[in-house]
Image 1 (tube, rainbow, N blue to C red):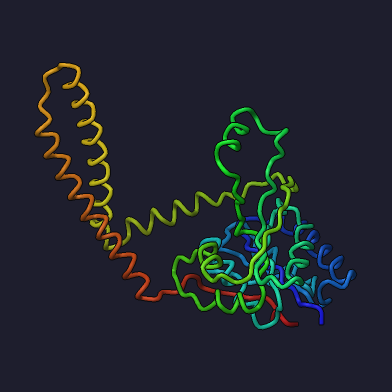
Image 2 (image 1 turned 90 degrees about the vertical axis):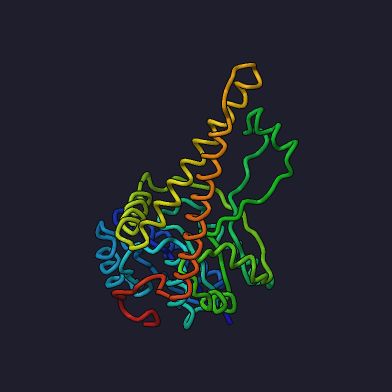
Length: 308
């Protein structure tokens, strides 16, 4: 029996590029189905990760006109990994395998063929990895580094295939800030790697950084834990300043200049204590947040059921 594939695509402010991306992935699913590699019932699942540029309206239009596409809207930007987990949870009931893919098609989607081939060989997880540059394209410095440092594979946990058992295990995690790469590695399912080349399909910027900074800024200043954050930041800044001052004054003494480093050393110890208290407070805040089990994301709307 052919495996039913769900292509899970987290989307953030990609309204203009999304119709073209869906066509790319739909064509790839059609090719795979014709070649008898996946089921003809395979689908595309779009996760709107709190976009503010009309991405959800675009998803609604696409899903209304395309029975292979369904969508989920999150109430706020929840981070890439949380959006992926949401998509995997939505697809778990219906799919045999799921591929997490890029809405801008910057990664060669032909690698999906090789991922499925690896799955058919018995691998439960197949991780994409950027194809390394050939030595001829490397500069002198990179050739020197490669001759000294052993080559390592840089896995891309934004482009991978997982089987149904792996999805089930991922869905058991309830971390508020989940790390998919660490989780997949720790689960130790039989894994393989597929290399892909990058492509400039869209000259498009989705501006993920600004919403992240805005979200962190607001949560920082609106929290009743604001004093703990201030202690941590001030302690870190003062520790860095007094450490630098101590180093400079020590060098001056070594060169023969008269300097009193005792007072600076006392200030450094005090600032390190302040930093340590703040660091401990941040650690306790992190633990408290995990214990509360607040949801990592909020689903506010979905399109038609994923199995229709």
